[in-house]
Length: 191
Image (cartoon, rainbow, N blue to C red; front, side, top):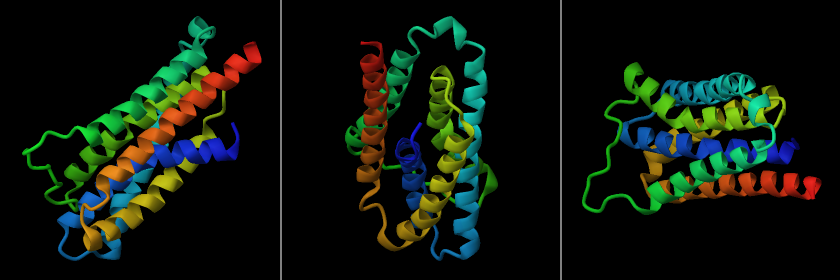
C-alpha cells in the first residue's frame, strides 16, 4: 500500500475523531494543554489499536474468502464512508445534538474513543483480507488521529460546531474513494 493511500485512509478515519474532538473543545469553557493531550491520546490510541484488532480477526477468515476479498474491502469502506456522509447530511431536524458533557471524564472519553474507532476495526479487517501489512497503517492512523484530535479540541473551543458536518462528510468521501481505488486496482490486475 502506498504512503499516499495509507495517509488518505488515516485522514478519512480520523475525521470522526476530529469532529468529536471539536465537540469536546466546545464543551470546555477553557482548554488546557492537558485536555487536548488527553483527548488526542484516547482517540489516537484507539485508532491505532482497533485496526490491529480487525487485522488479527481477519487472519482467521482470509483464506476462506480470498476470491472476493477486494469486494469485501470495497463494500466495507464504501459502507463506512457512506454511513459517515449519510449521518452528517440527514441528522434529525429539531433534535438537540448530544454534546459530551465533560470530556475530562475518563468514562465519557473512553466511550467516545471506542465509538469513533469502530470504523478503524473494519478497515483493519479489510486490510487483512488484502494481505497487506497493518503496522505502518495503524501507526499512521494513530498519529494522524492524535494530531487532528489535538487540534480539534482547540478549534472546537474557539470556533464551535461551524464545520463539524463538513469534516465528517469529507472523511466519508475519502473512505469511499479508497474503497473504489482498491476495487479498481484489483479488477485491472485480474482483467
